[in-house]
Length: 130
Image 1 (cartoon, helix red, strand yellow):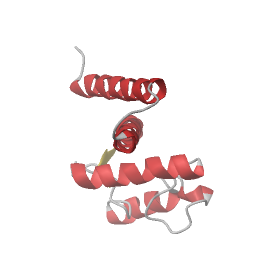
Image 2 (image 1 turned 120 degrees about the vertical axis):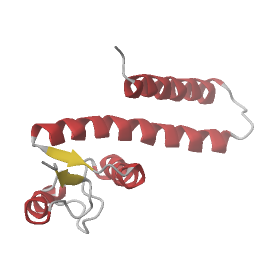
Image 3 (image 1 turned 30 degrees about the vertical axis):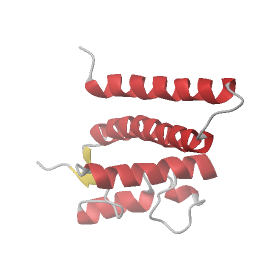
């Protein structure tokens, strides 16, 4: 059985491809700027979903849970995706020193906080409730 998340990623990828085709094939497109902004948003959303899938695998493997609040999780994932695009790594968006290797998510400090407090500072990871 195919999951809804998988189908949603396929639809997003197709929308991205379609927008790129339109933007690359036409010389004059009314509202070109709006289409570029829409494309950018779709790419960030797609990359966020891919990252969430990978982080969910990490969380499951390490007996952790991802934040269940969709808005908070979306904000953190978006910050991570933008960081990856800008700096080349998924640097924790809540840490001031972005380009410090120890701040790559899941960061060492966050895992220490998780053990001590039950969640990392940004709130992406939590200890699983028993």
